[in-house]
Length: 152
Length: 98
Image 1 (cartoon, chains in turn green, blue):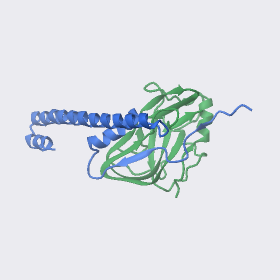
Image 2 (cartoon, each protein chain N blue to C red):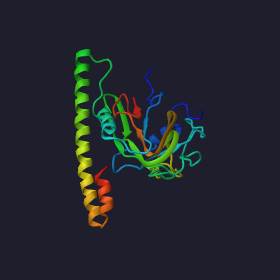
Image 3 (tube, one colour):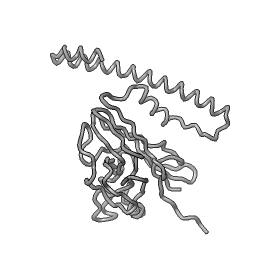
Image 4 (cartoon, rainbow over the protein chains, first blue to last red):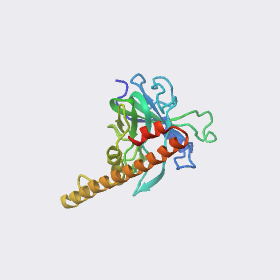
């Protein structure tokens, strides 16, 4: 199986230190979620969004995926974290094994040449299928223990 | 030695996926997801506190589902009138019967 684990991109960590990503709600960057079949081999070395292996457009799912709603980065104790609201693709026929979160509007002043840099790739633990129905990706609770991205 | 700053995510599946076929989610299904965002009950909490929190969580879930149904019913009324006003009473009646 191509999707066997979650990966935070190493390039994302570097880009964070360069100030390329802003997770602030509304005024921050636009982060998107793209769905994939089981053909791509994503690792921590994955650097950017790719259309290869992306599921076909269906219902409200279009090429490039859907726009996420950011949860502004905050901290709890000594852990800072950010998260996203759940996202639903409606009336869609989709079979996906995992997804990629990427930044479609990075700060290119901080790092020239960035296009759709990858934040993380996440696996679904098998194929998840909707048929003329809703396909919802549910993010974990936005807290220091469960949030999708945490700096401890 | 000072620990390094770690930026990471969980190794096990971190996102859940909920899907439907031939329909949308019911208010109860959405309410179940909603309450998971509102309340997190630790497995390690003392039993008395945990039981009370879980009972409260179940109660909140029912209230959320109830008001979701209210909102859907009200929205159906809005759509019914919009279709009627657009000269499609047949479609309006179809929506009303959902």
